[in-house]
Amino acid sequence: MKVAAAADKLRRQGVDVVDFGAGEPDFPTPDNIKEAAIRSIHANFTKYTPAGGTQELKEAICERHAKDFGTDYKTNECIVTVGGKHVIFNLMQVLINHGDEVIIPVPYWVTYKDVVNYAGGKCVFVDTDEDAGFTLTAAMIEPYLTNRTKLVIINSPSNPSGAVIEKEEFEKIFRLTSSRGIYLMTDECYCHFLYGSEPFSIAALPGAKESVLVAGSLSKTYAMTGWRIGFGLAPAAVIGAIGKLQSHMTSNPTSIAQKAGVEALRGPQDSVQQMLGEYRTRRDYVLARLRAMPGVKVADPKGAFYAYPNIGVAFGKGGIQSSMDFSEKLLEQAKVAVVPGEAFGTEKHIRISYAASMEDLQRGLDRIETFLKELR
Image 1 (cartoon, rainbow, N blue to C red):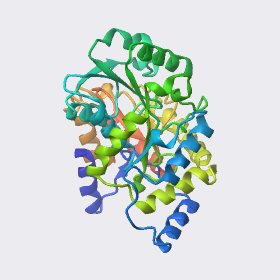
Image 2 (cartoon, rainbow, N blue to C red):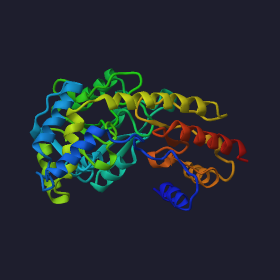
Image 3 (spheres, helix red, strand yellow):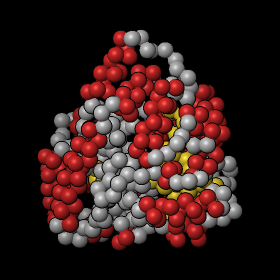
């Protein structure tokens, strides 16, 4: 947020800033989704809805998840939230008590740590191996499990690294957690953006519904970040508890956005594959450019739309001692905005979003390359 605020200040001063920090698609929301929202306005669908979302949208969520992944959720096992972040916050609030331990792989999406801390839980971080692509295994998790472990959080594809847990390994993680009565939260925000494997949900395994918690979002899949529609799929008792909490927190998600969500889920899905094709082209370009920069290492992102390069080669030069130093100086001197790895639990990395035009990617990477060459 500090870097984003500085970048915004420069832009308002008329400075040409290339922004690789945004964690959102640069594509517009598909027209059919926008038209559905407009129709709902004209139809005066502008009143309160049930706090947990309309029956129509919950049915559409369950249908889409079943069609895409083979699950069998009912509407009493589904809740609609104000974005994916909201359902994750709510899950922590209804499940985590003071002292409960939550396993979080590193690097992690920054919100996980804060919402666990807010709920009074204890974050237990499991480091992953950069040389192995930051992927997570059941064997890596097991030594950290205790009688206080309440939940394991998995984000695959990962923000920020783009790491993907292969289906067989994900199944091992599920068997490990379920055998010990531990909840497994799967954050499926980027589930459709995979470059070398087919989308799947661990919630489709037999018996998974008892302990698997699905945190989902329409934001990335349908380029609907500003519409703020997320959802949760979980045991009915958990969903009921979230519903009580949400009724006092936000009331319902926006009625108009819910109608748009129904169209997104039940309408044409072509836009998802179109975005994926563009991201693949951009990913390959970004990886090639980064790997041509002396000393820069970057693991293959197998999903999402982020690269997570190791820029430790810059440490000790130009007063840079941390990823925050690097990000601040890169913005100040090269006018490129990135997110420092400190936000995600690692010290020598930056996150680059390639949800940007090829022109911006070229300009920004040119600037990063020049910045590195000129560091003394």
